[in-house]
Length: 324
Ligand SMILES: Cc1cc2nc3c(=O)[nH]c(=O)nc-3n(C[C@H](O)[C@H](O)[C@H](O)COP(=O)(O)O)c2cc1C
Image (cartoon, rainbow, N blue to C red):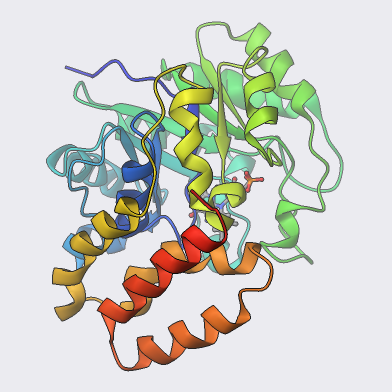
């Protein structure tokens, strides 16, 4: 049986960032946000010896496992793994423009072949969890609504219920993945139009939502929003999501957040790099001014694996900069 879940506010999949550790921190900060793993290639998912570390869920539901791939047998296996690890959803990445991903025949280049994407979604579908898609509006420099509608029309034949749209094209040649998140123009109108055309599908809007007030106002027009870099740069934004978006009592947020997170990561130091464990918290230093002294201290402590000193320093930083 599939669980009824709100996807009103989703934290976008981000490779190198939305690790199991980041998701734990996000869950400490918000009960209701819908979370994503980073994209994992189906082959790694199936054959990696360190699968446990890559996709550990640890009851951070509601959460989706995002995969990249286009071989139907692998996708079916990946979907079963998502069920086994207690994910609520398996999501196919058809939005990543990187060269490496194109070489592996997955990501945004799949938008060229809507029939293949349809087969891929069918391979992911089962009666336990939702099989969903994350795509762009199209490919290349020119926006083309007809292309987008024809693509969604083909995918709709799978009976898919949820599609996340990064509301800009992907440019497959000549610009980096990073530039692909800023240069192609956003078109929220296309998502509005497609939602009216396919009312049975829930479309979640993604791209360029850079504060919670914007997310709140977009939710008047869209079924749900997905936010990436805003949360990557400062995960503490999530502490307001339950109150502002879900109209629930917000979390009582103080240094216990840091304390709880460190309780979770400390036992993992034996088998995971300290950088990966601390990474979800380290990004706040980039977005908060005058944090250079803290940064160099943390780097020094990280080299020596002085986890307790790092914890104290972070608690001090967070209260000094009023982040909670
Ligand atoms: C560092 C980074 C890594 C990303 N990795 C993925 C990924 O693994 N899968 C995916 O579908 N999108 C990935 N994206 C794209 C985001 O999910 C999202 O679509 C994009 O950042 C636009 O949303 P935003 O403007 O809220 O950041 C990544 C984005 C960033 C910044």
